[in-house]
Length: 141
Image 1 (tube, rainbow, N blue to C red):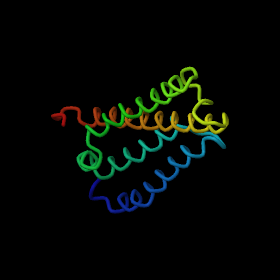
Image 2 (image 1 turned 180 degrees about the vertical axis):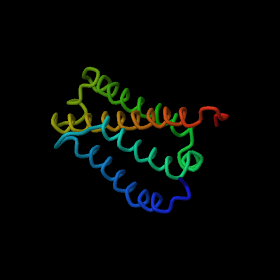
Image 3 (image 1 turned 180 degrees about the horizontal axis):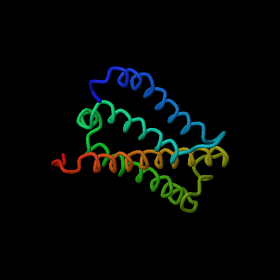
Image 4 (image 1 turned 45 degrees about the vertical axis):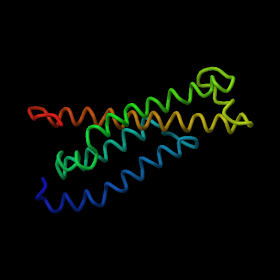
């Protein structure tokens, strides 16, 4: 598909909007449907779409396997870290109200960071699974 000019142009036009929509879903979750899982799936879908048009090798140069694995660990650490921060600040695990002097602001901050951790984890898991399936029969990186 790398030689298909129409597909490449459509991909160049659509991928930025798909990424923008993924970030919108992530950051608008307080006010409507969406959140970390949906945003992570949308962001990973944009990268997978890029890979289908331009090839897995080009995608692996842009987002190598070690980065995907680091994102997986980082997303999980963000989630766990927010929970542990609640304990260290005198609350229970994932008690967000202790994260700020104002309990409502603490709730918003805690939920935001948990959703970021979920989005990073979901996107990296989806990309990792895609990389494994796409590299079947080839030497792994």
